[in-house]
Length: 137
Image 1 (cartoon, rainbow, N blue to C red):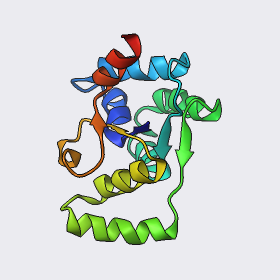
Image 2: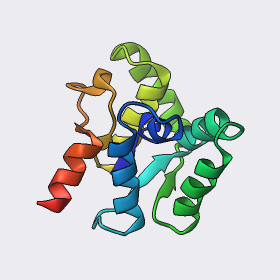
Image 3: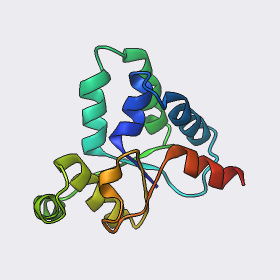
Image 4: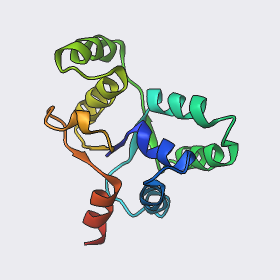
């Protein structure tokens, strides 16, 4: 599974669905998932840029999940960058959504996000609550 930027920023800035997202990260920390968990390098950099100064404690906790191998970083290749530009215009997605779209397809997995722009675009999207419901069932 691939985690979208908005899931992590939801926690960092204590937004409306932060608790739902915290439960997801706790489940990841407790190794509750059989599948590998990924975040794109682009998403990680955005999270670092947006929360680094304001939320250094949270950022450190999140980076430890990566350091411990509980979340893996997916790096896109130059071919992916070319595809992102095409997807960006062809599907009417913003740049961040196009990155997540390509990464999810490359990984052959689904995307955990609150972003509704990716629905019906050929990638399976789930919210943290939907994912948690599946593993707790």
